[in-house]
Length: 129
Image (cartoon, rainbow, N blue to C red; front, side, top):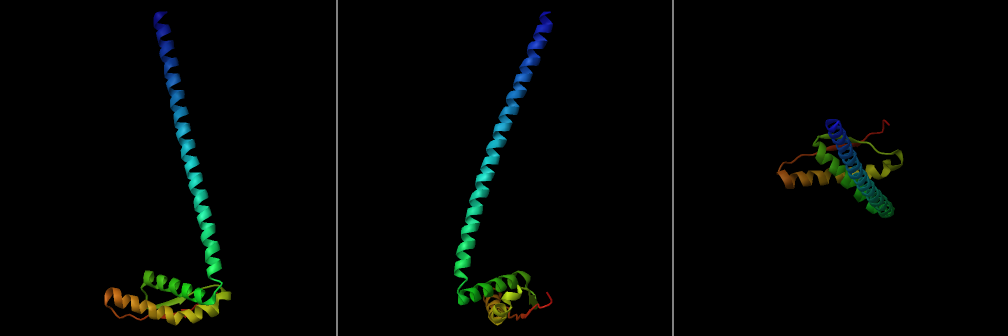
């Protein structure tokens, strides 16, 4: 009977330990999820703010042209191809078409400055879509 009582006590003690471990794990997980949610909320706010600022700045056609030119140059620097077709929304065709020459020149200038290599890139607007 003493042995049975001891075993019963050990079993209950292990049960309590297990329940405490589960409660602790649940609390840690809940805390982690709250942090993730808070981080996502902040990222969402930053995203919305950036989108609003960008839309306001790009209402100016000159700023829009510079922005598109820089985006094209950034893409060219990633691709490092000699011939690239640029695809955009149909409503942006005219603006992008105006930026192609400036983007190609900027690309060549950056490559010349960074690597010393002279490399030209032929840009065209993809109108198949």
